[in-house]
Length: 459
Ligand code: BUP
Image 1 (tube, rainbow, N blue to C red):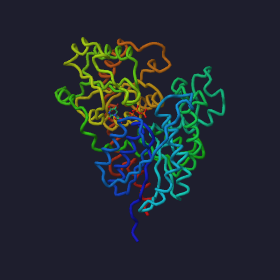
Image 2: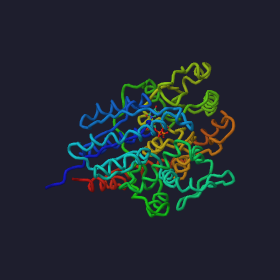
Image 3: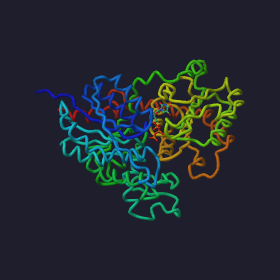
Image 4: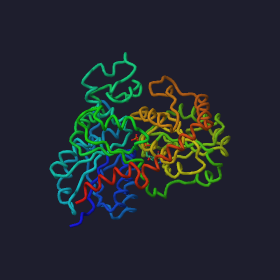
């Protein structure tokens, strides 16, 4: 009999940064004739997640959907954090075993499970009971993945993160400056830390780790981890990025588009700090001063709360009316969800001031858009270092999260000018874009890796 394409069940975890790469992969698998089952936890944390899942399903009627209920964590039982996304990771881990019956009766039978790193440890036994391979999807840089994979070792030595050290050493990879380590990792009891450490311990049971990165972007780190220098019990790391985007949601605010269309090529700085960063109002004011001082055109997506449902402030309460007035020909400030992939593809965009969420970095890499890195939390400082090394932009280390006081408008303005005027760097960023497109094109390195996985899974 001839082999038929695999049936793959995908389980993302909470937050747009996690959902987005799963939807992209689901779309790619589906267009390669796989049967795809998307599993989502309900209720979701943000409105963006539920609306993107609905939209995705309406665009991909052939994708099957399993929605399962999670019982939200009691915030009082986790005194180390009130982050709703971390609490949802925990709640999802508690509930995934309930998926066994529906997955066991899947038709055609499942060929594999692709699950998010943050829920992998609880899903691994389900995959084992089903008798199918479990692939883990990592939604961050390979370098930060190394930090997470090595975390149990770091936690076993209380001096790993001692403030007397300037860097953290992980075998095989370049040392990490101590300030790049997410602060929760210094507390072994922190919910996020214990979740990551538990997931890390389950890595060796996975068939492979699929990663949204590409060989030319992180060559040394990928070589180190795949040769067993970081840890000797990891399955193969499979770089398949940058993941292809699919038709985005159209009903969102696009009022900035006509304005963007009329700006000169590569003249506009796009400013966004992702879906989970709430900047203080004082820092927002400094940023507005910085943008104005730089003299460059800008498109700024402004968010003021960690979860979109809580974002109720109006532009006029956040920014001085005189700023909005003075800059009305130079820039646009938008509240609410935008289509970032469309913006990054727009010829008028010449730079990207960003927090370095990994999806944003990969989206900029695909288009060769020059970045000014301003990490805010989590994996973002490590990601910032990675993109700078790859030639995609610059990272101002002094703006890090350990800093006391605000980053002033003057500093921000100067850095934007430095970024936008560096033609050499712009050339390097363009080259990153070419390499990214080569990797995902036919016969490219990332494309080949995915093809091999799917061939292996054919039934
Ligand atoms: Br905000 C915003 N439009 O308005 P990251 C984000 N995005 O398309 P994060 C929009 O959401 P984590 C908006 O293009 C990216 O694909 C953006 O993921 C898109 O950062 C995704 O960049 C956001 O990884 O998540 O949201 O901070 O902390 O998990 O990295």
